[in-house]
Length: 320
Ligand code: AKB
Image (cartoon, rainbow, N blue to C red; front, side):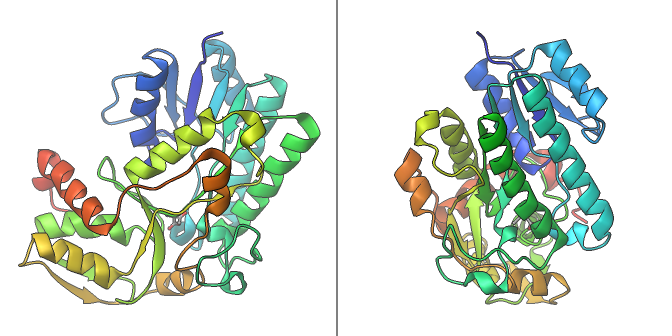
């Protein structure tokens, strides 16, 4: 049977890059991108979908004969803190609708991401382990700990083939991230190109786990393509790409753009970043399905500039 893939939250940072890649893998017409907002630039099949509405989700699944879902919609760490109950409700309602739909429509596979935000001050800072204590300090982290437990529950109780990664901060050129604590590491590239100056909301020595978009996408497709018997973690896999501080990223950008300048004005996001690990132990992902990141800091910086410089819309619009 042909796979029919539904991407929920396709306009977000990961969805914008993942939907076209899935089209390459599964062929155009077999990937249905969906989001609560209409896309600015998407040539493939698109459905307007509010995933908090179970009936609307069911209708899209029925209409297209969906066999797999990538559920990427979520309110992230920084934005969630402005209205925790709202963030919890959106993250939980969409999750439960997707899991229930997976059961009702007997979907083949479901991808539901988690995040390094599941970790908190008690998890350990360096090479944080898969089974570290999960006591997050943000509502986003709390919702992702619950997400992981729900995924595991649906797998063990109903046999749903649900797979998940704890994404680090994702650095991408395809779109701007929205509402995360790690967003600075994308914003800095746009400001470098447009303003030659960046004011960072984290302190210069704040080490955080990050991953370049190419590695993040490859991790996602490799996990989803792995044989089910290889998947030993049904909550969510630790995933590492690289770790760096704002100062290290600044130095890497400055090596390409010597006139670039930075200053630091830490805000509430500093507390969130301080509660997260600086690096992640992803040895179980490496063992189970052969995970291996490829991008280091300088290669990532070069690739970001290469892509952003091709995009006139980025260069000719002021970045707010
Ligand atoms: C955030 O900063 O909230 C996200 C994440 C680490 O999941 N990028």
